[in-house]
Length: 282
Image (tube, rainbow, N blue to C red; front, side, top):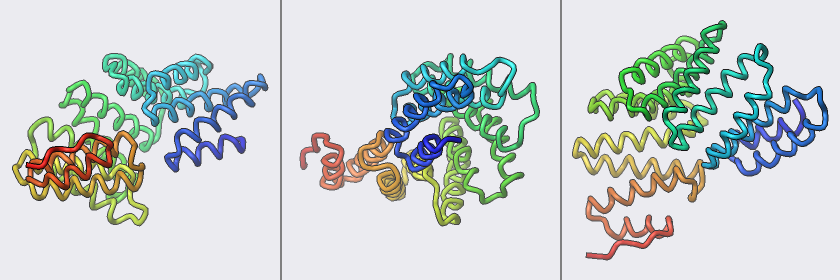
C-alpha cells in the first residue's frame, strides 16, 4: 500500500472525508501513471466513492464505484468486487434509487455465494442487505438478514463486540416499523450497553439513542424521549461536528421534543445552532 493510500484511509477512519477524498484522488493520479497498478487504481476509485458517499454526494460516488467495477478483471479479485457492489448498493439507496440498490446488493450476495467467505465478511454483507431491505420496506427479510448478521458477529467476536452495534441499530428500526416497540427498545439498549463497555465508544451509537427516543415517543414516555434525543445530539455533535447532516437530524429531533414538552426556549436554542428561524415564545 502506498503512503498516500495509507494516509487517506487514516483520514477516512477519522471522519475527515473531504481531506480523504483529496488524498485518494492524488493517489489515483499517481497510480494511473503506472499501467501495472490496476488494482491500486481500483482501490482508489472505490475509496473516493466511499469518501464522497460519506459527504452525502452519493450520485457522484456511484460514478466512481461503477468505474472501479469496470476496472476489475471479471474472474479475479472477487472479494473486492463483492465489497464494491455492496458499496454501490448503499450509494444507490442514499440517492433514492431503491430498486437499483437491491439489484446491486443481490449481485454482491451472488458473488459471495460462489465462494467461501469468512463469517465477518458475510455478516457485513447481511447487515448492508438488511439496511437496504428496510428502505424497501421488506421487513420480514430484513429481520432475518440482520438477526443472522448479529449471530455471526457474536460467534466470531463475542457478545460485547462493537461490531454488533450496527446490525442491532438496524434491527431496532425493523421492530419500530413493525410496531414491536419492546423488541426495538431491547436492541437499542443492548447497543448502548455494548458501546458503554468499550472505552472507545462507537460512532454509530447516537443512532441507538435516537431510535430509543422514537420508541419512547410512540410509548408516550416524553421525558425519557427527551433524555434520549439529548444524548443522541450530544454524541453526534461530538463525533461528527455540529453541521454534519446526521447531527442536524439529531438536533431537529431534539428541538421537536423540546417543543412538545413545552420547552420553547430550549427548542429555540437548538434552532439557532442549526441556523433555522426560532419558534415564537407563547
